Image (cartoon, rainbow, N blue to C red; front, side):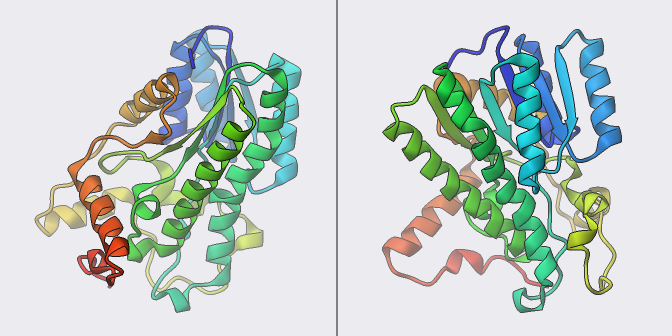
Length: 294
């Protein structure tokens, strides 16, 4: 698909991190950009910054876990711009779950699934039928993660399960679009190949009351800076991928109609090979034994 001035991109989770980087990149290509985020103040700041650079912007406060909120986003987008060519279902949260899986609170799972899985489906359901009806070239990008999308990090199992679901949902979407001979493509995005400085570590700041934790945490939430400091203290230097590189990867992938937006990484390739070989050999998942479960 060609990206051209006058097209329209919709990005959820657009007020910061990967979402904001994608929004900036689409705006640089001359696209009008719809910014959707649950965090109102950060959203207003992002919209102001992009408009100051001359971008055509529509900003909407949206809770992707609420289908009505996403339908309202679609209505506002089509009322304003009359079309959508790129849809990035990018909003995501960490769950804040602690301990073993059987110790997790149900609300940790409900919240993570509401945003990370249902949020993607709500975006697909609200926008894709209209994109198909328009008959114009388009593309859907769903954000997954190497954690779950490739192999789970057991210490973040709730998040991993949701991101595995995003991969399967996007594979199914791709097949359905092909069956319709649609001019709309689909891709699954694995941000990386290294760690990213995003607001995912502070997801709890936006946790709604309906998914509130039922008991106090045993340990305080740890920021990315605190985690990075702990890793350094343990003698591990952490590599980071700039979010701008992720946005560039998305633009390149849309242009190439590339389903797997998976940056080159020997670490990822080893995980993929190990997991696939385990399945082919009907062997136990020894590739998980490298992870230490505190």
